[in-house]
Image (cartoon, rainbow, N blue to C red; front, top):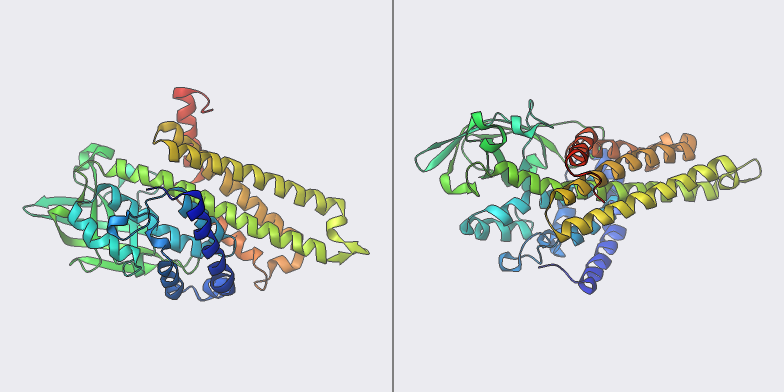
Length: 384
């Protein structure tokens, strides 16, 4: 059930209050401490935002594609890390909504919507990042159970997660057609929560290793059918790439706002530096590029909201590529506008620069997005 425009505006008004009163004052501290902001996650749950991906019959207010993306963009204006904390819930929830058996939906989705359980998406492995079909984690059917062995990495929010959407091979010889998806509770015997990575950016949203050592789950924890895992992952990744673009647009907006404010206030050679042509032209380019990236992102959202197709997937790839690349450039230029202040942790633009670099890598590197776009050009020609 898509949310109508009037209800969406009410939701976004509540988001803006939460950003202003709770998240913006905590953004620097979340980055410095590198601790998961559980109180803010609970606050997001309290105003119903974690239910945006979940149908009403399971305690949600959705599912809706557009509203969570707009929420993520607003969060990222002050904290890309918290935007990721929020949006990762959608990455992991969408496969459950689309492919889980009814019993598992009723067991887990209300707890996810309330914030009681944090869901996580577990696809990448040490030897399989961009090449998702090359995953080596194995799920072997033994009677009424699957026995899972393998290792996952880069699992967002993994160390605080309560349930994991896991992708593993049920047919190791079949490449992507041998990938299946499973719902794995945190307390599953044989699941070991490993270390969190110490990253330069997006701190406060833990990125975790998971180890499966003869982990046993009931056979009915399979999502969809055997061999459908790759398709489930790719559908989820289209939305994840639009969300990555959302975070990039939001972070770039925040960085540009700080740069413009500083350029208005900073006086050198007798006038504000925004009146010096070199800085004025730089800021003008930043604003124009951000407007273009935002327009492409909005167009890609409209495409994916209209239909699931190769063309819509290509637009999602283009939006992810252009928005994250633009955000990286704007963040670097914002640091330049602030000069020495831009290098100081007392100002937010250095944090934005560290955060948005990760967005060029997450959810398929930007080189992977170029491959996807190129393949579509080869088969179909221009996607517009």
